[in-house]
Image: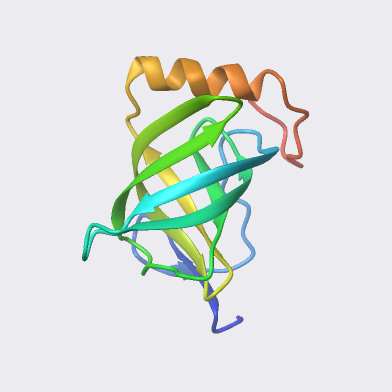
Amino acid sequence: MDSKTSSVSPNNSVNAGVERRKAPRYGLMAIAELADPEDAKLVSGKVTQISRSGCYVETSKTFPVGTSLKVIISRDQRTFVARANIIHVQEQMGMGLAFLDPLEDQLRILYSWLVELPSTSTIDPL
C-alpha cells in the first residue's frame, strides 16, 4: 500500500484501492473552499469529481482522515455548502470528502449540477 494514500473504513481499518462508492461519480471543475477546523481560515482547492455523497478536492493543504469541516463549492454562479468528513487523503495532492446530511436546498443545487454532467463512474448505480 502507498504510504501517502489511505482511507478509513467504518471499522477504522485502512484500505487502499477498494471501490466503496455507492453513488456514481461525475467529472466537475469547480472552486472549493474548505473551512480549516483548527484556525477557521479558508483553504482553497479545485473539485475534480463529485457525487451525491461527496467529492474530491485537489489542494496542496490536506487534513487528516476523519477531520470534519465545512465545504463550499462554487460553480455557475451557484454555491453548495455542507459539512463534510475527510475520508481519503493524498498528501499535498488532495482529499476525498463525504458530505454529512446537506440541507434540502443545498441538495437541490448539487443535483442540478449532477444532471448536467456525464458520469465517470465504473460501478453500476443500484
